[in-house]
Length: 200
Image 1: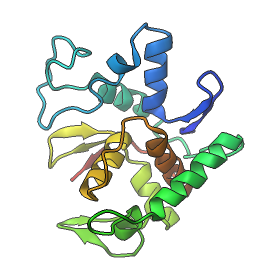
Image 2: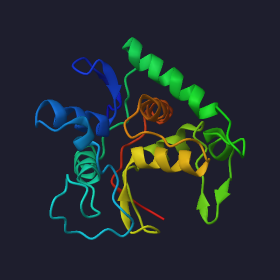
Image 3: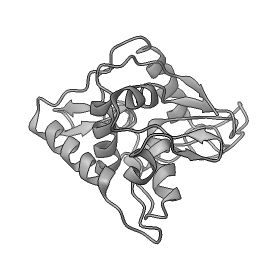
Image 4: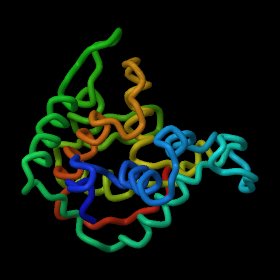
């Protein structure tokens, strides 16, 4: 599993979802707004959608595509590249974002994911600076969240964590989201990709 990585045609580092958006725009004729219209499914969304790209209905074709493509990488080693200067910049920006604390609760990613043995309700929180925890956590997204009755992607995980910290909304496929994912992928380097998975 070698994403996120630099793509010359887009001249940026991309994760799976941002790469799909690029392909939908350049190869299929969607506008960027159309391609990003429904990035995440609603909780407990019905399985039937009449028009998946209109925003009508609750299923997200983007999430379904991500799950299928991720399944093709099952068993691969997590091996993100940092050979391109923009990949190194994304990693550095992601590291800064991971440790950045702000907002009404002075939270940052490090608040929940910087110590052993932390939990939220019944859920153990991985220490993302520990390679084994990072490998297990990163390598199992996308995952089906039993508590929500829905499949969720890594872009959703970043969006939801930022929301829970009461930060401004993280834009889908933004440079900030990709930087965070790049940082986490590098922390998980050497692990085995085992997604889609089942999560609480």
